Length: 104
Image 1 (cartoon, helix red, strand yellow):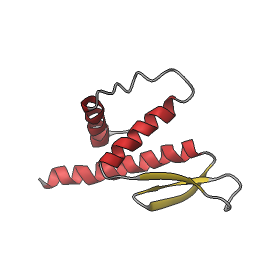
Image 2 (cartoon, one colour):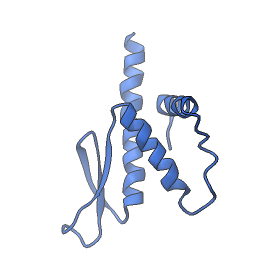
Image 3 (cartoon, helix red, strand yellow):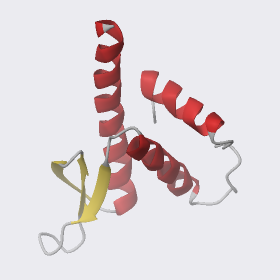
Image 4 (tube, one colour):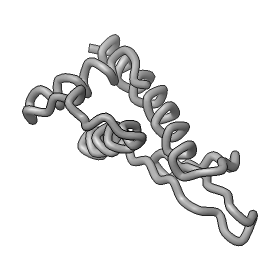
C-alpha cells in the first residue's frame, strides 16, 4: 500500500519501534492492524487521515480526509475509505518529501 519514500520511512519507523509488521495474527482483520500502524506513523509525520461516516447523506456511506482536505467519494465501509485515505496520504507524503529531498 505504501510506496517509495513513504514505504522506506514507515519501515524505518517500525524498526525503530521494534515492530515486526509481518507478525500480525492471521485473521480477517490483518488489514485493520496494518492500517492502524500506518495511520499512527502518518500522524507522527504530520499527515493526518480521517475516515468518517457521512450520515444522513446516504444510509451507509463513508469518506476520508487527508490533512483536512476531504474526498467526497463515498465508500461502503470505513475500511475501504481508510484504505483510500492511506493511498492518498502516500501520494502526498511521497510528493512532499521527494520534493524536499531534491531541494537540499
